Image (tube, rainbow, N blue to C red):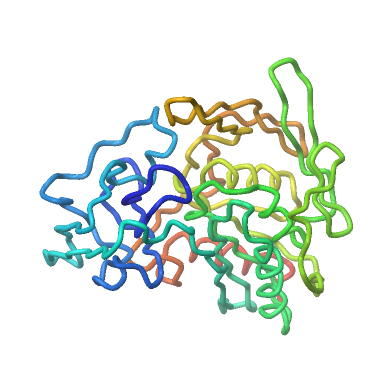
Length: 329
C-alpha cells in the first residue's frame, strides 16, 4: 500500500504480498487514479527501486509497497498487458487522504444457467462510518428486488477493519445465531452473536448494529459463496470464521493472511505501535482458528479482470451456486 504506515495514513493504491508487484486496488479520485494506475498493473520499479520483499513479521506488510515513502512524486515502471509503461503519481500535498475516505460497497447481479446471484464486494471499514452496514444492506435489498438465488461475498480486498461492522452489514444472510467467538489462552471464551438485527460481543450489544434505516429481509434462504485470499486479513478473517458452520456455504480462492485473532494496538512513548494478538477465534462448531484459513475450493484471482465473470474465483463461485437447490428451476 503506497504511503501507508497504518490505516488512516496517506494512501493511493494497494499492492499485495509476497512480492508487492501487482496493484490490487486504486483509491477512487486519487492522484494514482488520475495518473492512470490500474488494478492488475505489475510494478517493476518504484522510484527506481524494485518492490521490497515481503516481511511476514510486519503486520501491515501484506499491503505495503513503500511504507516510509511520503514523497510528493512517485515514478512507477509498470507492466500492463505485456507493455512497459512509466506512470508518475503527482501528490500536490502530503496531507492527501489523511481522512481515510469512506469506501462504498459495490455489487451487481451475475446471471447463471439456473438463475441470478448477487455479487457484493465488501470494502475495508474500521468502524468509523456508521453508514457502512446500512449501505451494504441497502445494496443487498436492491439486488434482491427480484429474488437472487445465492450470494457471492468478496473479501479478497477487505484488508482488516472492524468485524462488528462486517457482521452487522451481512447479518441477514449470515443468519440469526451464535457465530463463534474469541478464546483466550486461559480457556475463557467470549461469544459473538447476531440476533434481531443486532450484533453482540460477549452479550454486549455493539453500536455498529445501527443501520440508519430499514433492515434488509432476504426473500429466501440462499447459499453463500465467500471469496477469500491473502488480502483477507484480521477482521475479515474473523468474518470468515463467523460464516463457518452456516448451512450451504463454500469458500473459494486462496489461503487468507493468517490473523483470525483479537488484535489490539497500543501507542508507545516513542510513537511506535505495539500490536498484540490477545485471543484466537472459534466458529459455531467450536473449531479454533490461529492461522491462515484454507478455501474449500482453490481458485486464482485474475487481477486484470477482478470481480468480473472472467475472474476464475468469481466463475467458480457462480458455477457452484448454480448447482444449489435454491438456484434450480
